[in-house]
Amino acid sequence: MSWRRWLPVRRLAPRLQVRSKTGRMVPFNLNAQQTVLLEALESGEDVLVLKPRQIGASTLVAYWFFWVWFTSPDPVTLVILSYKQKSSKHLLRMVRGFYDALPVELRRPLSVSSSTAMELEDSGA
Image (cartoon, rainbow, N blue to C red; front, top):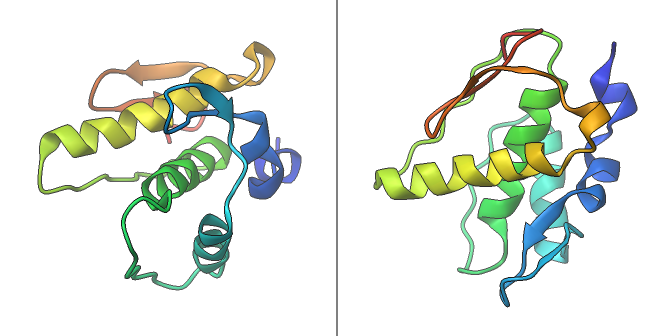
């Protein structure tokens, strides 16, 4: 199955939930800065982001990682690096949150699910 065909990156986002600044779970509707960053990621080129704080870049990158990982037909390894382990685990929890927000019928089985890794059973991604 071509997951990327059925779950385009821009159409899937609003169907998922993110935590707002007030702590409520809300649909993930991209803001203007996230849209620009997504366009850069979609280009396939290397991306270096110089940005102010609090524009949602980490959320967008976690979403991008989730989408690439979840829709990949082949094994793919994505790595989250951060100065502090706490930050890396936070980003992985965001990816896990996107997975958990999928309708049950879309969730592909996991062969690994821990605080430091997730792996899809069918593709090995």
